[in-house]
Image 1 (cartoon, rainbow, N blue to C red):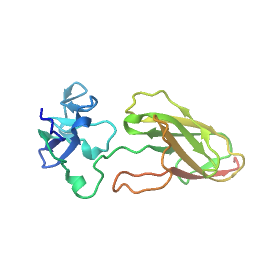
Image 2: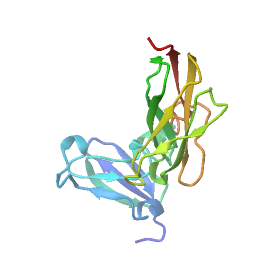
Image 3: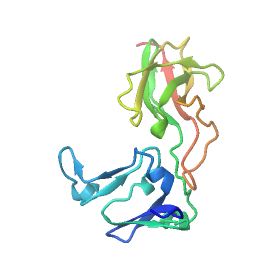
Image 4: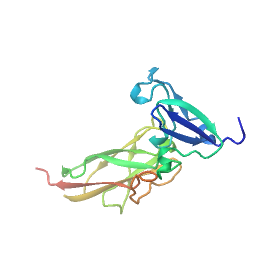
Amino acid sequence: MSARARDVVFRAADGYSDSLPMEQAMAGDVLLAVKMNGVALPQAHGFPARIIVPGVYGMKQVQWLTEIEVVEQDYKGYYQRTGWSEEATVKTMSRIDVPGHGDRLRFGEHAVKGLAFAGSRGIQSVELSADGGRLWQATQLEPELSPYAWRFWAYRWQPAKPGRYSLLVRATDGTGQLQASTEQAPFPDGAAGWHEVTVTVSEAA
């Protein structure tokens, strides 16, 4: 292989293309998938072959592959040409799934549950705040299924009294980096911010 090789370009049957730097493509965790659950890839999942790149957003996971080419220049795919991030590294995220935003709860103990994800970096911890972010409590993490998988968490929450509460969640990735608090739209390099759920706790009937 040429010492001048810079990017590996993946081209799809529908005309879509994207690339990875040579070093990233050869790192060992990038897969060329031709089967799913022991059988040929379904059409909806990229038949006849697709790339799986841990730790990056879906725009890098090229499906319906027809060609792989090594080039000597920085190749920019469709999304990069329209201003999206070239690295597309997954940002650390966490969310509250239970209770839902706007739920009314009876006064008493409640299970707060959700998930966290940080691409290939894994999740080290998840914290919950029931006072809008002033105080934080560690949640209970379920066992890690894979460094590349969602990490489920839970917390037994006992409100001090009836009222309106803002529940916030934040995660720390496997490198020790805390999830960004500032809200950001998906463009150009992925959404960010802490997930917030507001609930009302009422006296038991």
